[in-house]
Length: 488
Image (tube, rainbow, N blue to C red; front, side, top):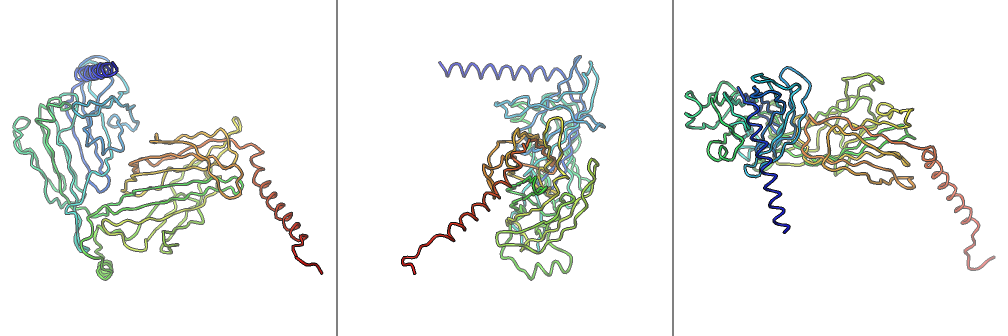
């Protein structure tokens, strides 16, 4: 009986889903689609412009479609009207298990009337969309990457004209896929190359591509093999602990970072002589990471940097003054790190980075509610890198109550734990947030609010006083104890 009910429910949901897609097909048509793929290393930027025309009055919800591979890669997705900075509301519109397509709905700012048009721009950031080819390289070799993706843009609407462009960061493009016979969609060359840009199309009269039939019979996979002159950096694990101290008026931030060079793995053994020679002639191989330059907040002090062996002295920090309260500042502190060894392709490096900041630069007090408000940066940005796994832990003062938090993006998992450290009595509440596939576009600020009663402020000095008093009493008692076996 339960199986029958589940089968009926799944049939009902699939029927409603297909009914929604059918109604979506009747709402709009694409007069043109232009997709631009900015090829890179760990991150690939994709911008797609949909020139849409309403086929009925009051058409407002426009459907987007992502294939399985594209959906797994996409870490950042936003939509806007061309020429406007404001983003449009974007919601999950369901998954079609038959075709393996994910749908999203974009709400236009104003409903379109019959035959009215609008240009919707969808920007996405894809992670792990490239891989080194060849997979191994010696210290003197260059670095080349390959990127594969589906040719046609998936859409639940028919498209009059479609064009897909691949832009390589280097004019050296080793090869690209020729889709072959495309007489059904174009009478011209199906693909052309101009400098570092490979253009597929224009293709005309493209039917609904977000369907199982089109994916099986007409969709094609294309690949671009290109030279890449920058390291391919990935952060496999990232742990941030931000500790708020009212007694010290200090905010301590400590990052535990695991780096990975995702470029071609090293062929043979590492030669320090070859590495020094390449640096002397100013031609270091692109798949070697000699160091990092990170932008840290302004006003920091007491920065430290160590790895599994101990303190690393090959670093340089140039600090900026704390920003004026209530004013926006574009200044930042620059930290230049040089690991103990150059990071070759396929190698890993783990280290800890931390610093202190004045709490007044990040905290405020709301007199109406009695809440403290502290702004915590979500993460340290690694330019051009993806953060695979991230855990952010924000430690409040001991005795804090009514803890709440407002992250810039929804975490995969969030909870509150108790953190116990030196001179604590009952421990401190700590907020833990977990994320995956973070990019520089996700960098933002986490706002935490809490209350600290007067009794909580007095806990630490009372605990210190009690500890000292206990030591004095213990010394007093030991001084007067006679443990001798025989007395004089």
